[in-house]
Amino acid sequence: MKSLKARLKRWLTALDGLLMPLARRFPALAALYYLGFSRAFDREHSAVLAGRLENRIAVRGERRSSYRLRRSVHRIEKGLIMRPRRPVFAEDYIGEVVGVVIGASRDDAIDVAELKWARDVLDEYFATVDKTPTTMAANAAYVAAFPTPLAGERFAPFTQQPPDADAPDYDALAALVRRRRSVRWFREAPVPFELMERAIDLASTAPSACNRQPFVFYVSSNPETARKMAACAGGAAGFSSSLQCVVAVVGDLAAYGHERDRHAIYVDGSLAAMQLILALESQGLATCVINWADVAQQDDRLSRIIGSQSYERTVMLIAVGFPDTTARVPYSKKRATHLMFKMVP
Ligand SMILES: Cc1cc2nc3c(=O)[nH]c(=O)nc-3n(C[C@H](O)[C@H](O)[C@H](O)COP(=O)(O)O)c2cc1C
Image 1 (tube, protein in one colour):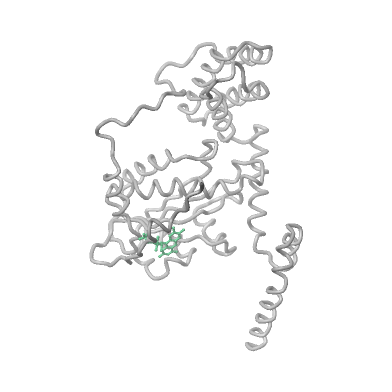
Image 2 (cartoon, helix red, strand yellow; image 1 turned 120 degrees about the vertical axis):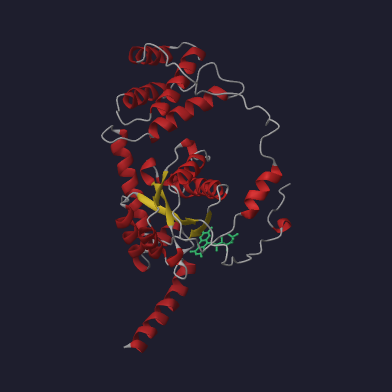
């Protein structure tokens, strides 16, 4: 039985070796390969579809989501900062943006600061652009919904000033960045909620495509749950007994209506994760990223523990805790700087 299995595996590997060079020649053949021979992309396909569907439901206003608001306001802000700024822009979608902002203002769960940002930006838009039938109609709808501007700090385009004298310089950043190492052994001490919250606050300032921020950090500071989460990944097998807290960085494919944007959750989630890691490090908390491979059973197990949705995909797990200073850390020599770039003439 064992030898039959091994023979079958060898045969399949050989067939794979024959099919791969053929299938890679044309995208349609590659699609056939992944339909008939390998089903490795099934879960990704299904999650992307679930995300698009969820996005459509949100666009129809049947489910709450601030992605559309965030992207819409972002587009207007970009128009406002252009040099030279066009006398009138966004005519083909300003009506839609106003509708999105009005819709968001009726949502009890909306973040009031987010709405204030949207209102401040639109106030500036209507005060700045030339009056055309389209902008006047949009402005009329806007003023009818919001007769007076909101008081308080203004969240609209600004000018970036040079850093002041006590801003962190290269050396300060270098000290923090070089101190961060992947630590796998932690003290048996809880990770204070306030430190995690402060770190997430900084992580949330990371850049993201169209400012959508399509990810959530699922945090467990319960060592038992944290270990169960890490066990789904496998990469923490040797040191899971030491884990105190695990963060799952989870991307939300419902932020997008098109497949072409499906990678943004990984890019944006990772940029924010790095800021989270450094913010934790700056507060004395060590981390170790735990790899998240696309494996069905692992996905299902983690999803059940954290309660994530079919359109959410895990980007990585991060173990967090106070380092056990008696344990050792791999040296992990880095590549030489000169090998890390190629100058493009
Ligand atoms: C995406 C990613 C996945 C990783 N997965 C694991 C893992 O599963 N288990 C583990 O012990 N370390 C993991 N690491 C940590 C790496 O081994 C570590 O970053 C690398 O060896 C460099 O060491 P340093 O972080 O101390 O600089 C991962 C790191 C990254 C960025």
